[in-house]
Length: 110
Length: 194
Image 1 (tube, rainbow over the protein chains, first blue to last red):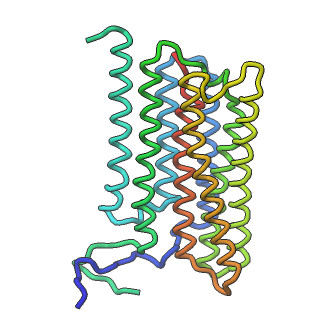
Image 2 (image 1 turned 120 degrees about the vertical axis):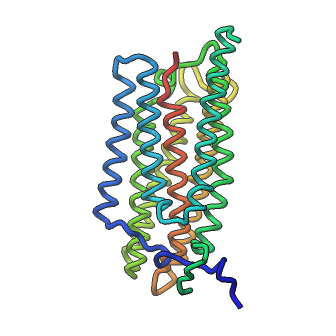
């Protein structure tokens, strides 16, 4: 007898895409626009912090769009979404903490 | 297809689930490399300006190629779902071509760096080492994806009706390659030095 707790419950047929070809095209154009925004931001005469923050923000939006819409992470079960997103967030947190630590050490801080 | 179980745990198809598990572990490898890049960059007193060393225009074109290939592989999966074998093969071929274009562009960039007046080699400095290791590791993934998609193309060409499930698993890997490139593009090519 099958265990109902581990019964497969696909939300849609394998390979099914909830996005139409037109929606995918708009997604591609959005990603291209964000990339152009990134390239443009490198030429803007802004402070280092503003450029880094802006570039990081645009990059994260691009990554999120690819994960959510192209890779259909939004259609996956909640536990799988968490299993994917948590390591990504942890890596970002580690990166920020270690880079800050490096900057503090370089400047002779505590 | 298995019917819905109200108290059951929703599971993706075995292929998709296996690919997600692989991608999470593979992402750890890229995460380690990008962490190393960030830490070494932050602790270095001098770091070469990526805008002077690398061609941002070439990197942007390669980015567009990968983004375009993500669109085309999605269109291939969509065509397979609609049982359009010809369109599936067409979009798969376009995706493989975009992948080959990316690999070719990366090889050309390496050649340009190695043959420049002041050549940039693996042993030039830490930044150059990280550049070649990170982009090389990613390039191997793109090449693996091209081989994978080519194998799927051959398998689909031999069948009368396309199999969207198999294509969806391959597409997942290809989108991951694109996803990782977004992080590499930011960390290696865009992030300005102090």
